[in-house]
Image (tube, rainbow, N blue to C red; front, side):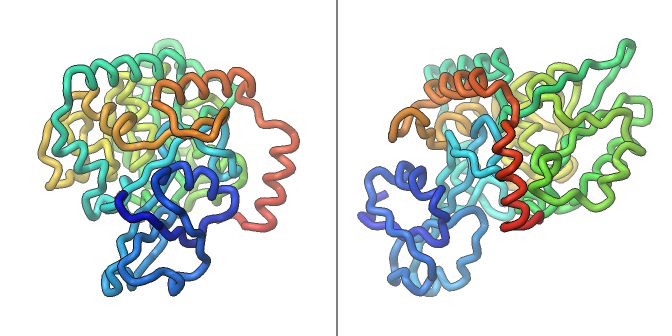
Length: 341
């Protein structure tokens, strides 16, 4: 980024250190009001934070969000991230317009050495059962004789990824009902979103009735281990669909997530502008190597995806996937201060 100064609007104190890491060549100035941004400047915001007057003032908006290999623990718990993404066009979960990630996937000529690196990275992720949050201490095994097992991952229904990436079905219950109706003889497993299980985000509309439309509700099994037990993942925009692709599973998308539309998924809501057919490791190279920025927990520095995997494995081994007692107390405080949305 050529501009020496970038302005960051509305970032809480715990996000400021990693944000500076994401802009190593710039001075980052944190501000609390939009009118503190000079005309023609670069403004950094979190997620889909609205900036309605940016165009008329010549302000370039850069959006920041969690990456796809984030942490051992939930972002809603304010656990420090290992990866963020920085996007100057849009953001990966907003399917209404192209993002930097979409353009990477649509236009990049992936060199053989990059694809080899992506294949090795994917193999390590699968072998280590790594996912975005790496939480859960329970287990689940597919029932003997279950010939076709479908996982339906729940999402936080108020999330922007559903608002801007799911033009049809928008609730977990409606997704479950649709999957059940289309697959009456399959064994359907529903996994609520970990933020909802932790009480940090609100349950979806009618989600308490999920058990009526599936064969099992699995709460505490780690996503990586659960994916090994199923044959397919049917989802709206959940990252579990991408994690299932890494493991060679069939993925059916009822929304328009970043990994849909490239010939790797069955898409119920096709996105007409995505016409390129990708190999899996091209998708991996774009989404896990070229797009994110990885930040070390051990030192104040950007690191490679491979180094991030090393740190994730070490972090999970030390943590054991458990939620310590003090974290549960902190959640109670968060619920009181922030509320459950």
